[in-house]
Amino acid sequence: MEHRIDRIKKQLHAQSYKLTPQRAATVKVLLEREEDHLSAEEIYLLVKEKAPEIGLATVYRTLELLSELKIVDKINFGDGVSRYDLRKEGAEHFHHHLVCIECGSVEEIVEDLLEDVEKIIETDWGFQVKDHRLTFHGLCKQCQETAVKTTP
Amino acid sequence: MEHRIDRIKKQLHAQSYKLTPQRAATVKVLLEREEDHLSAEEIYLLVKEKAPEIGLATVYRTLELLSELKIVDKINFGDGVSRYDLRKEGAEHFHHHLVCIECGSVEEIVEDLLEDVEKIIETDWGFQVKDHRLTFHGLCKQCQETAVKTTP
DNA sequence: ATCCCAAATAATAATTATTATAAATTAAAA
DNA sequence: TTTTAATTTATAATAATTATTATTTGGGAT
Image 1: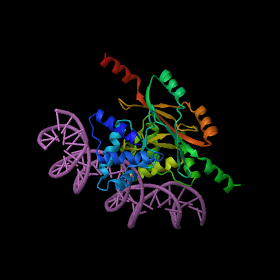
Image 2 (image 1 turned 180 degrees about the vertical axis):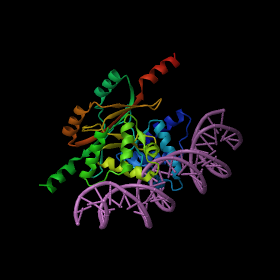
Image 3 (image 1 turned 30 degrees about the horizontal axis):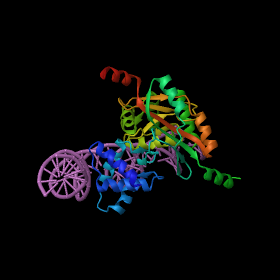
Image 4 (image 1 turned 90 degrees about the horizontal axis):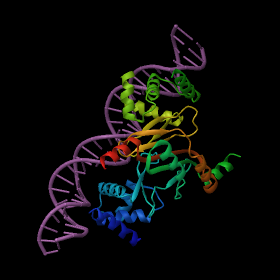
């Protein structure tokens, strides 16, 4: 983990930003909860455990900065809040998500899967793709099984 | 257009909802501006031209109702507001979008393009896809051309 | 046609998410 | 260590959305 924080520190310095303790604490939370899709508020509460004096606005600023540097991606699953997701190391594109409309669980798909589609977009529409957001809404494995049992 | 309003009226009645003048005015705006991706506020201002007494909260309620009935889709392109997009008639899935990071223009892609990907998701991940959201971020044709001229 | 009542609306007010401001503090380069 | 631009805190402001409640109304039943 230290290694990744160091990398982020370098990325910040490269643009003459500082790695303050508040930013370090925020990044640590994101690393520790990499599987989750936390909102700013949730991140704020977790960061407070490490750095109780931190303010919510600072967390927002930090997340915005990390977004600009493409260290995190900001997503919105349709509830009113933005969620922040660490980009996989070395990933060119943002990964995809499977959101269960029953239980609300979110699964990540790291595989690209869109190479062919992006090619079509570029050739047929002349649109130069830089990034994407792909989310599937449906039923996760567990909820499908539950549904079968419940409605025989 | 009348035909489509009638269909929507029937869809409402099927769930014992009423087509009030306010709702009709809102639907008309959505039909007239089908190409756009209007926010609740923008819709509200346009509806006001037809029905000046309408309140913003009513527009929100109407849009939420139309969302539930899958008549419109609610999307978020990353700016702070939700946008509302009429579903194409008979469309099974939500259509895709090309958002230009330079000029902000939004183009619609009606073609499915995701059939293969959805098959993979269902077989490899066991996730039953009900709907999707796919947005590409990049440079539209025009902005690519402008970029070439500006940086020779 | 008119009566009735659940459904819907207007007119606030409240909440929630996010961003701005200004004065004080601090990371890190020289 | 000093310096300085970057950053933070604390607070306030703004923007988006939702809740509340008294009043009105669409449309089926009479």
